[in-house]
Image 1 (cartoon, rainbow, N blue to C red):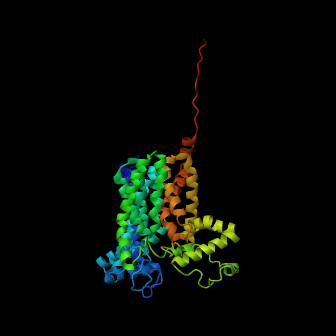
Image 2: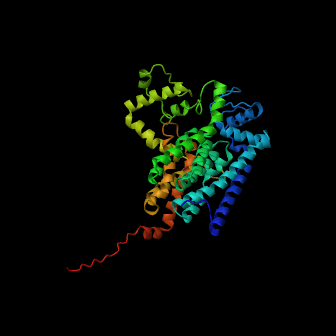
Length: 434
């Protein structure tokens, strides 16, 4: 059974020590580097982080949620991140203190995430691998970068880390409270990144594995959906009142879909513009609304017709590489350069794939399934859209658990040989003559 408790005193000491290490290191880094972490220009907002700060200030001072629209209301982004950031600006000041406090808050989240890493990895494997997973996470450079930048990835990651154990415990307990919690956490995740909304669909596989009845499935699905809708309703009402139309999440979904059709930075072949003369090569990748979706669909139609293998590889292997093989680490910290970080990232991902392969023989399918479904969901859901390290980062914490399993295998191979050795008991059959 899954447990949130940690009863072993030695494990507690190790985990608390690692959490303290991460907290001190990340806090020291964000305080030392300060606004070095800004990716854009606050005076001329030209990147997501400074745009978020601008949005939070406008929300605080004018009560208007606007992003990329000056002071006019918009539904370009979900409101979760700017609302929380605005809270810190309100408490600690808009002249720098609020941003510093928010960075320190992200440091606390990074340290606290090790607890969830431990209990998930312990359930999947054992306490030894769980501690290795925490050590790998404590030394993972992108975590320290994520603590300093003003982006939503750290907050989203901690919500998903809370959602996975909630999923496991709810399936095992079969109680309505657990499924209400899943609905709450899914709604919280959607307020940062709406693509998390369908994550509870993985329960279908877990329910089937645990032999849930159709009645139970329907009941718990309704509980999740009702909780989710109640918590998302303020956002829907705001959009309905502000724009006189229903907006499920945002009106900018066309942009990531359109940008996701571009293979590397290549230009589209001339044949595309001959087939679709209504498009201009200089503005083909511009737009964020229904027109952008239409452009993307036309590009895919042409691409899969004339270059099917290239587009198939791009929408499978290419997207996977884009998500995971480049580190979410865009600024050098403490002497660790970008090239070194990307090499480390590639090695960790390869090790995680080895860990997945190895764990088939040493960990039960029932214990591995929730995490595998999580990794699969947050990989596949990005395939139609633009993929890069920022979007793959929240899922890396789960891949690192498999990296830890591979490390443990290489450190203690004898233990695994004993576990996988097949013993055939001898059976004596005595036959009595009639």
